[in-house]
Length: 296
Image (tube, rainbow, N blue to C red; front, side, top):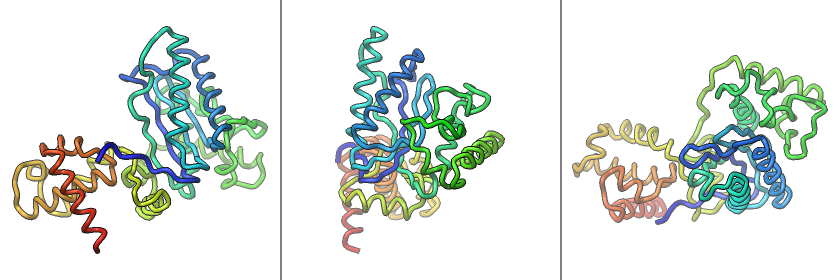
């Protein structure tokens, strides 16, 4: 079992986050930002993407995308490679610009499209880059709040249509929505592993992608998964991570291996290091639970 592949299927919506290698800046000038957006538009046109929202800060970029084809990996590989070539040429540098593998969470668009556009547009305020999100130059917020703005890169209608039918009213109501967001603390979105949405959505997305696909890697999901396993089996973390072989502990450990692999998308070697086990032992436990699930 190697590194999990991404779930990809036609019509999938993703919240993508790109970060700088070693937390370094990925945009050193406004020209860098313009080039990145030009490249994004190029790949949008080439692959028929829908780009619902974006926000660029110094060391990260957030994108909300829909892929009509099952091809997010191809899109992001092309975008990352093209921008890295520009950056290294422009700034006389070599090597990676982006930090490892980009993060991509599958989004339940029907439920969370509006909320995610709002979160992405609020990022400059949360990060202290602007006092008002619609005044920040390097996000798509203006394409939502200005009724006469038609930015070719942004597909705003899907979210704005949920506010009203008339474009002027849509923009006014979205602006009011953003003002309300600015006054409220950010809350956690419901997430299951590498999905923004409920378990039903996660199951339907896996089915759409095919049973052989595995969710994207999401290390942030490990802690809540472990907490749920500990609570369910009534064992403490020390015993779960220890060497004990009591039946209840072993059962909890096997479930943790399987859920960390399937829901959080962690690799077998990573789970093995976490539990101080051999990769083969983790792999065997995961396979046994997979087989049990198929025979039920």
